[in-house]
Amino acid sequence: MQGRCIACVALLACRRVALTRLLEEKGAVNIIVGAVDVRSRRVQQQVLQVLLRIVYQPAGTRLVLDALDLLRAEDAGELRLKRLEVCFRNAADLEYALGMLRLFCVMLNGPAPDGVQREVLLELSSLDVLTTAVNHPFAIEPPFAQQLRLLRSAIERLAPSTPARLAPIEPPAALMQRAAEPAVGGSSSTLASL
Image 1 (cartoon, one colour):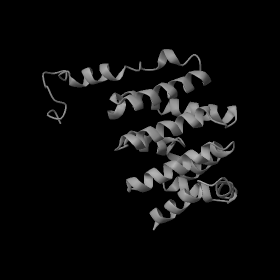
Image 2 (tube, rainbow, N blue to C red):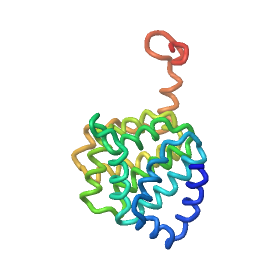
Image 3 (cartoon, rainbow, N blue to C red):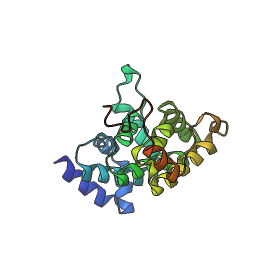
């Protein structure tokens, strides 16, 4: 049922008038954000599409952060963006991983006010999202590497002193070569050591 609702919202969000109404409807963004970690890949993709449309609006990133704030385990010290970071880290297909990177980039570089963008930057930095992206299984894919460069640029734009602390982004060929090298400790397969 939740999947059907998200599918309808995704279709409606394609229209500017419907998206504006969605943003004005109290609690609507909370419901969409609450569906971000559903099991269905199709619904995950639809939720991500709606979130991308939301954060492209000037107040959108703030609305998403507020919704994430309501859903987080505040008493456990969880950051608002942790839920999105977990979805990104566990992305099972390239399209979804790319979409999550785009979402992070738009939240950092989009129409949100500078103060909101800095909040996003601080949380993404605290969650070490850039390192997660560099080490992601899809990092060897050229579109992923390109989106990763955009994420790094967005972070550097907001925090020019940050680059020294960030892991280098290797070109896809270097990542593929590194993945093919034998694991340290004599095992030629990471899976064999598990």
